[in-house]
Length: 119
Image (cartoon, rainbow, N blue to C red; front, side):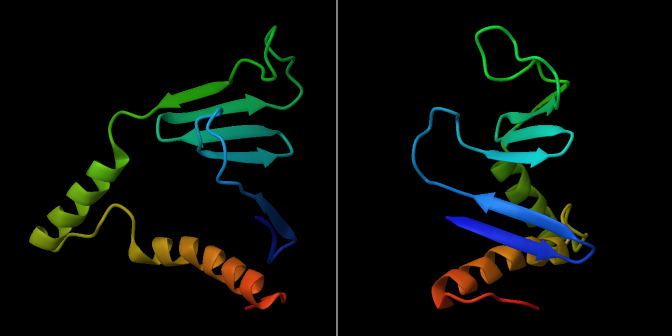
């Protein structure tokens, strides 16, 4: 699946997705003008643009590595149940989830109708 998303203030996102192969371990790759961030359940790695790749690889040494410290699914469920019990606010507000999901829903609508979708 490929999608181009145009946001206000001349901000554009191009999404390319395929549900095949696992050689890269899955996850998401964010590409920007100054580098790349690879995000998986194991953590994330940032690679600066213009750095020479490590010998025998396609990537340079990462400028930043942050490893996951646990299982995000378990942490999220635990937080949700704690909030039900205590009426506290969750770590991620529902509005953030709605905003994150809206882009996917609009992309699916455009794909199914074969038309550009705008808000």
